[in-house]
Image (tube, rainbow, N blue to C red):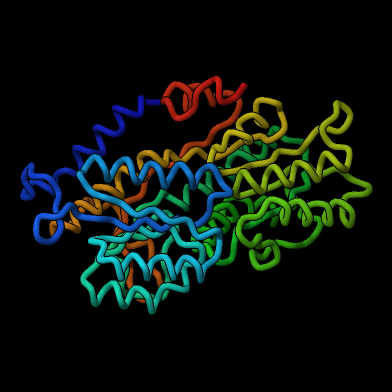
Length: 363
């Protein structure tokens, strides 16, 4: 994998095209004051979101902006109030990673009235035309990579697997628009194997509404996994679990171990994940979790900072998707980054050699 600096330089070159008319002056808001950006993040309970917030502050500081960073403690009303306060304070732009993408209609009308542009960060804000741009990862590819890993690990792709194999499916939070993209992309890969009997979902729960996990909560996923094991797997082992997020994966693994999995006689099933969080990488190295999806949030912050800089200068930022993300009121122009599948075989090359993690983080 290329070093982070190389990737950052490439992104910087592409995105700088839209800023050629801006010149090299320091960034300012009205009357010569440094422009300010409000950053609304969902929660501090995930290291991923702590990193996102700090990365955004650092990247925007590099442009000369001041920032206001708020975390909503996974409370949609709290986040709306935080955004309203930022608008009232006169920020020049907003970056919002929503707790619930459906609750911003009224407050973003105020942003529009105040001529404050908005970037939807990683999670698409829904039901309002007052979202200018969306910065995220290729969320369809995330689900595809997770499902591909399961199919390949079970030998379904090349026909070497001696099935049928049992699998259970988990989906993310109902208030996160990404949940649907992850799930539908994964099912596009897995559904043919379910239909031909090579994969068996013993619970019968294959509709997304049956497996949603509010707030991506690990204990909630653990509880459901316990229920599935108690009801469906007393006389047969489970071979794979589609989990869309690392925090959920660890909860699922906890339930599995409580049911005797993780021994030579009863190995853990394949368990996927997402976000390459340190506890899950450690779990992968311990041969518990099988895989995760790495999304370099440093690059997401970089892309978003360039978007903000473009908007403040009334320029159009570089985009690479103008068709996929319809929020119910408009197709939101987007810049999507590439996710990467990570397992024990490539974690060092992808995560450590790129500087995203240190070996000492994993000891």
